[in-house]
Length: 182
Image (cartoon, rainbow, N blue to C red):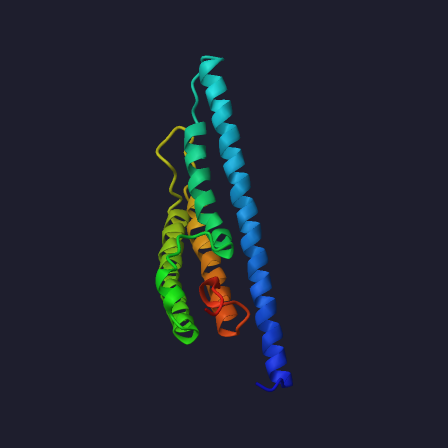
């Protein structure tokens, strides 16, 4: 393929897009890790208050649950960036490279469609909670739009990371399934 100014610009844009989405996914991973650390610290504080001080706790359990669920959702793009999701390589290993690439593009495309649906309904769910000012049915009464916001954010970032992975495979910046030619 001859390198023209247009292909050079497109390659530069795709590389920049892939790199920037990778940076966003890494930031999301750091935020998710911080949420897990906060949940552990709150759990320790809750154990101390209950066991040592013999007092009751009102907000800790609820906050820990929301932090852990939110950390899971916000950590999705980071895990995808690291290729940490469950992956079965048996079929791709035995496929020749053109079929391996086609299978990878198909699975990424299908994943993008499914995640786009999750983003849509996650946003809708967050929006309803925000508009109706839903709160949890506990003494702490968390405004539910806050933890629900991690649905569209986490899945939206996962969508972008999957899109970056698709662009990387199509532009030959990454190997399909991370496998070399056999």
